Length: 200
Image 1 (cartoon, rainbow, N blue to C red):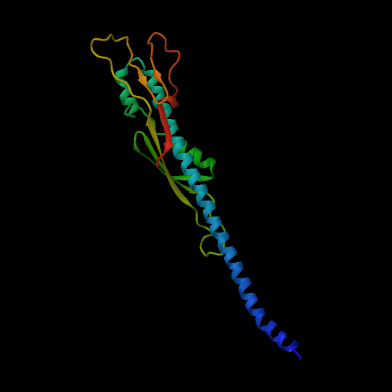
Image 2 (image 1 turned 60 degrees about the vertical axis):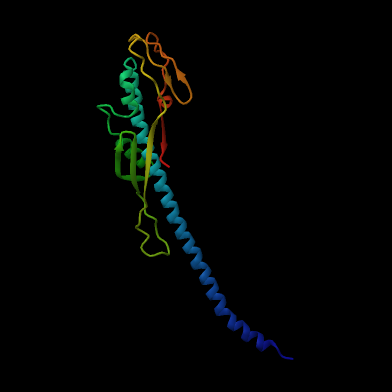
């Protein structure tokens, strides 16, 4: 008839199990928090790297577009411009530094492997922070990104039987441009001539 002592004994045995389960759940919660902190830090680094690489590429795109406008009356120079092969092209890694700083990171390296490509590596200024995982409090995330400048236009140089005052039609992705050397008030914008995007 008496069952109370038995129940009290069961409760006493269950309490350590309850404590163990709760401790395990807390550990998992803190572990997931640490993973989340690290992921957020990496995402911040990747965002900074993407922005830095794109900024450098956009700056070079604008230089190329300005050079095309400067040489618009000399179509023999156009292909070199679209290939990025022009003298005096300025390294745009300074723009990468500026964009990385705006995203709370610093550039570890900025490469210009081809005239139409930038690869930037950045490191976050802030570490992952305190967590249950030992050694992560001072770890910073490092990520890289590559941005590509893609020419959007093609053209054919006029034959020898065509006068020097005739400019070739410029065939771009979204529009064909018939250029009049006597009226150059409307010319393609940099984004008409080149696309800038992150490498796949």
